[in-house]
Image (cartoon, rainbow over all chains, first blue to last red; front, side):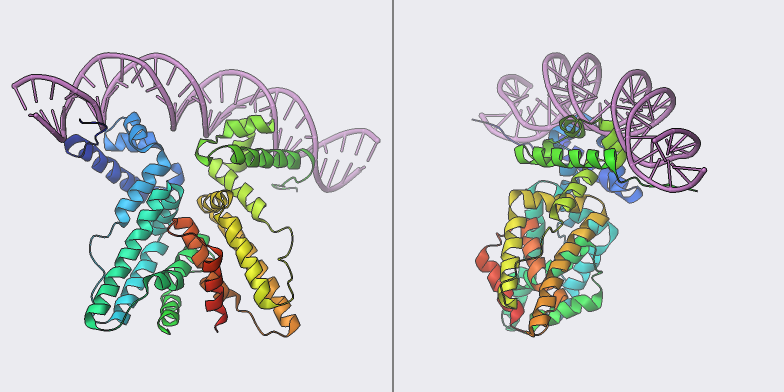
Length: 182
Length: 182
DNA sequence: GCCTTAATGCAATATATTTGCGTTAGTGGA
DNA sequence: TCCACTAACGCAAATATATTGCATTAAGGC
């Protein structure tokens, strides 16, 4: 019976919430490089050892918080047509990701375990799949999600991560136009 | 006079070399998460405080080492034609970056200061510019480097970083074909 | 309500980082 | 070549962070 069960309710969940919000609060006030686990523990009203045991180390914790914060709460806006849906979603995506906190979330996700990164790009796929389902329902034809990742998302993320270019709205619209041109 | 000069010769350079090779040696034998500064210091025959003072912290050191290791020693192979040059370069790039050490270098570069990342993508640009110069010299027409970054490099890097797909040779050739198709 | 045990807190220990100070060794000028 | 200047280093003490054993708390199933 009961082997290696993972608990989800009550105290355990409350502590996770406290720790997450402590991290987010600290991220607003200081650079990521100066945040420490004891600092988070104190703000969350928890013992440091609890954090170490649950999350392993700071990278994993930050990645976990970043993923939780990126988790979509709502579907992308429905503007009535696939092209405008796509533009609205991409522009918002680029703006969120290129902001200071967005960049931090990206690097945290990539520094943490590989599972965080997979989840993160899973969210993006999910959003694009939503747009695809809408397009099909409207009879506007298909939307190739893989191709959208390669032609639109990947360049935006690349330039944000490597800092060699700002993903301006015009640049994003250019990527979308290239994608739509069959 | 002499304000804030930076020394380059002798001991200082030797120590940098020792530390770099110590890091590379350690990276071969263990996971990046278990490497510590004192560990590196001992293998390099140096005091930990020296490393802390020169590089700040582990992230910056690893980023520095990764950048140094990515710095191109030779130009990409000259195969006689732009298309084959491009294919040769991209396939090698994808293979290097998707290897275990390649992934580590990428995340190290992105975790370290922003300057490391810029240098890193500068190397890629430089290689593509070399291919472009060759193509122009041969009278094969132009090669749009920015577009190559967006259409070929960015998707490869994206999938390596987020781990949602392996950049196989066939996949890379598909990206190249898409790029060449005007 | 009772039992089992995952999850936490506490405290002791081990490890890593920072810092003050004396020493070594590049660098430029005489 | 020698000398003055000082950046960069080594050492060791002080501080901060990470790990671990053990007692305690509280989910989840009965």
